[in-house]
Image (cartoon, rainbow, N blue to C red; front, side, top):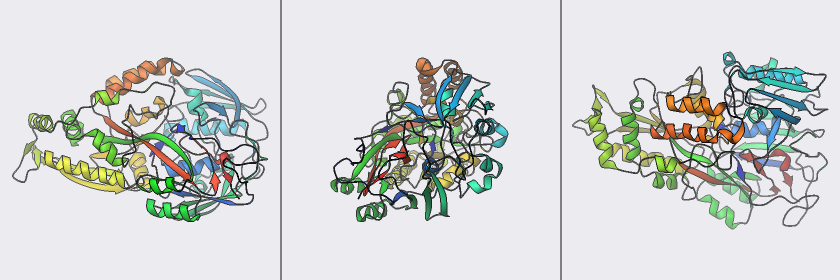
Length: 527
């Protein structure tokens, strides 16, 4: 999808503009059509489709068609049934009772033991799943009781939202768990669709399972307008995607940038997802300039964050309150009041005081090492992000840095997160989460390739507040979670500056959003 959420966990909450029509009639009149194909644009190739080894939004959207989780989060942010019909949990244990009659794509039954194996696999650090610490706490294990149809999860460390986090893990069936290579371009799940064709970089064709009847919530399989097939079509250029949508060649596309206006003028079906989009990271690995707080502060003070946010979102964004998507279980944060305002004079003075002096060419250096900054940005979120990267380059060059900007595809950013590849110094890299617990592995702990703390952040105040918050179930720990975020902002470990309000437009079909993306069971094809 075009709105990159490089790391999407349980997903950013969505702000639906209106509901699809119920029963046999679509909203706005007309009728539903049977036997059609729904074509959804992906802004970049998802890379691997293995749901336990990706942090890329396009792969996570694809995974929603292929895999189910124990619980779902609906368009209002509420937990509803998935593979489990009921659940209960504390900060260290959770029990899920499964629905009956669930089968995998090949017709084999899904068992409680199979689900428990997924959770234990992801929770084992040796397996290096990108979902560890996001859905499943490190070291957490699960036991399935096939006769009772229950899965019991035990976590060695408290997780304030354990049932919601573990409940959101995509579940792979037994054969796929035993042969993970087949999941890279295929699937083995209980989802509504299976992969029938995969052409990397071009399209993925999915076929609907007519027997599917287990979610989300009280979803029923006998509904008019469900597509027989889904095509996930890779289209990197936003204007091209808009043209395809207007011509009816595709049915849905995320749209970032000025093409929104002409799609809106065409009065297409529209839903909006609100999520963090502009987040600035500094690599704090030993030997990097960003390891020095004075450098991070100076680089941030050189920027007008409001202006930067408007550039990224083409004027449609809103200033970030924190790192968690709007509408989660905790109140909005205080990022805007804690981050420094633009002050170029103070920024230059800070670098002077830290020993970074300008040479004859204007580039600052310290101990014979130039203040060189390689800035990564995602290419899949529209032209605004590239423009923002160029603005950063301009401001930081004036400060005395030697700045190079480089755009990366979603798959390349996935390698940055997973494998720690690339000697970068700064990045515009959005995370999309709706629970503060899902941020923890990206902001603390092990670094790539042993973990996903990609910026090598080591903030004791953040860690202490996380530990305190994790011992309190649910929203009761929100004050501690907010204090943890504030510790990051005070040290400028990560700088959130704008949230997107990104529309997903549709033509020839209606759909709803949840967990930050199109909900497969909500798609209705129009006659």
